[in-house]
Length: 201
Image 1: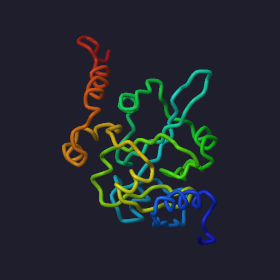
Image 2: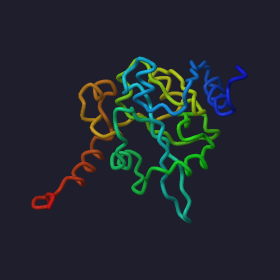
Image 3: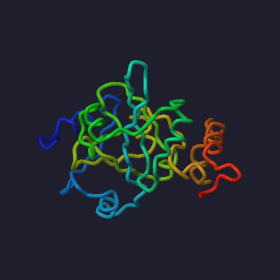
Image 4: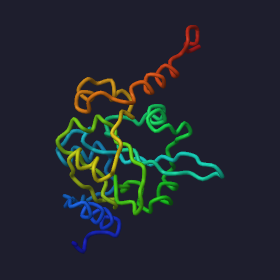
């Protein structure tokens, strides 16, 4: 392994190697690039940049379990859809400090896999529309290039619509096929719609 690899990148590389996959890592000169700047630097669409968001679901006794959400940078995670898909009604996003305490990675370096133990992961289905995706690789300045199917396989992700509006795009639905979560999602959407006479005051 290259001496430039950090311990976090090594964990990611090892997780992929255990499943027979060699990853395509890139080291960026700046670790503070926004998603828009990173896409421009790589010459790709913003939607190809994967956000690895850490959420937690409550458990008795004040405990929480982590759920990693993989979402395109052109979309926003929809917690109502995520709750409908996972069945975790109290799920929420973590703070940067909580995410680091859970996994040990810097907030800009949280990878989609390589967390050292089994972690429940959900991947938004709209990511499947791209040939290649780019995700954090365990260090602030490290990224990796990966195909959507490989990303789903290595992360063990449940592929489902969990980003705002992405599940409504016909192109995304065709890539995945009929969604077993459609009933739950429709119920979540109906619950959010204002009732008659409840518009903004």
